[in-house]
Image (cartoon, rainbow, N blue to C red; front, side):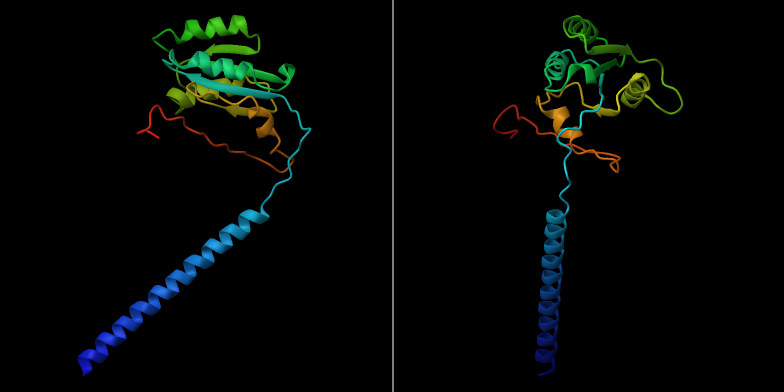
Length: 181
């Protein structure tokens, strides 16, 4: 009898604990959904600051042309846009492709990364050097293997206001095949 009573108490305790955890989980989900629904930021439809786009490239001969062409065709006033490609000591034909794009699209500038200073090495060093020569009010970064949508800059700067420090974006991947998807 005491054995049955102990087993019953243990099952009751486990059930109660499960119900409590489930209710806490539901409450947390509800709070998250509520918070996200209340956090709509006002977008600045007519905000057009100067923008610098920094792209660090190292051995990106397969991707860099598509990236730079997508940046050159952005729907944003070209007089307010600068694209800086920082070559991070490529050993393939990346530099030649970038030079070709610089001739074709005047808003693209190029820079060869110098040896790292302080503790910066590799890509972080290249990006820091690109930032140092940038002139835009807002600095955007993209990888050399990305193709951006034409609305990328305009859609991003709309999220800035006087009290905004950082805006983060997301990357949508295009899988190479069904299995990768």
